Length: 251
Image (cartoon, rainbow, N blue to C red; front, side, top):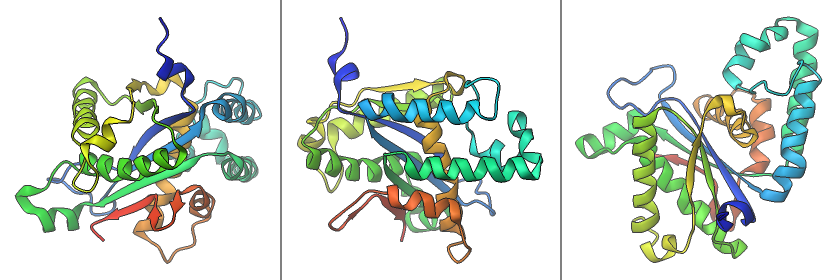
């Protein structure tokens, strides 16, 4: 029997992360952990997002199985070695920017400044992934209630059995116990089955999240430097009244 939540929900959401969540060994050049969550209407995802990404890939590669990975794109590595050609790179990035600006999706991003977080909470500091998950879903809860929807399948990129099991447990705790600011009863109204997919599965939504994550992290690290990629990402970030889908912790 088909799970009606998985097959008929109005929305679907995708996770990707930028940076690691270790508090014991913090990269001085990238002291952030960032969780990026993309929500898109299922019908729009099927009819526009997936075909648009495939069409874009087929203009540059022999097949659509290429995974749009921001790190490889920036470094012109792997299949993106074609970007070592300056004219190809210019065309590719311009088309990708236009595509990302046009795609209809809503973005929720939580960033943990790990040095400040560890200094503030000391031994009480929790895993930054768990903290980012809570802050993001407090905002996603607001979005879902505003849309009068309660079904939201969640797709995250697989990171290994141990890491996936830990995230699954944290996610279950969040959905059943709520947070300090949002009651368990509110969260329990959401139906959010979580599944993990490998990079090789070429999930378009995860790639969109990946392409939003690094420009946002770069903007937060160096806000005074021009950042065209973040300028494209910014309009997708959820805003409603005093609720902003971009959360930075600690402030």
